[in-house]
Image (cartoon, rainbow, N blue to C red; front, side, top):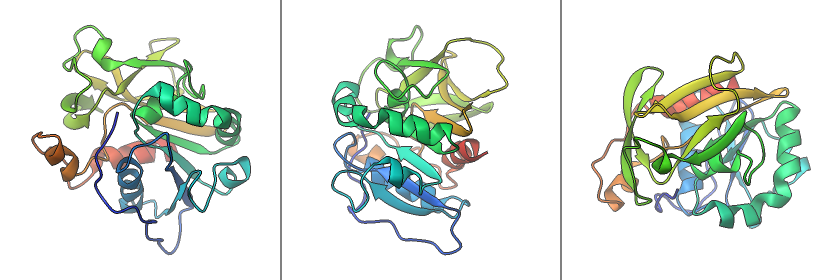
Length: 239
């Protein structure tokens, strides 16, 4: 679920003509490099976000009042779900109310697991499971790997470390659920859906991974300079 340290621990630059504030969690439920990479992806998108970090050691703490100032909240990758949930459980109702009232939740890897139910924020139309445990999974280890997915019908190869798959309560056609990507065995790798007046989008692999992630893990570099997959994920949650 983790990325490696890829950039300095600094507040992202702020753009003019803002498309709204995007808050990226940075704290004990995330690992170094993951929040920073998500922040850079958001900054690079055409949405023109102002981007800032939120967490117990940041200028902004994660509270209901802070969330009300944000257009989008992003939960990046981290280590284990159990450890992360200890840090995040107290924020469950604030995050649910934020999204239900019109906010946007964007979850990457561990952020996708945390969007589920067992345990989690309960923001998905179902729950999550480990992709590596599903029949026919092309990755069977928690070590860093690359994974092939079909993203809106186009083959993509992404950085992966024990990422989630989403298990829907009601499989099949659902106008409120937009399945963005599937792993090669057909399991859901990314989706977006409506939650109250807001939206949720989650992804099991890491479209935000930079070249450093691949190099530090000894993997062939599959970064996409155009960031097509990451930008599509952002557009899906902002729809």
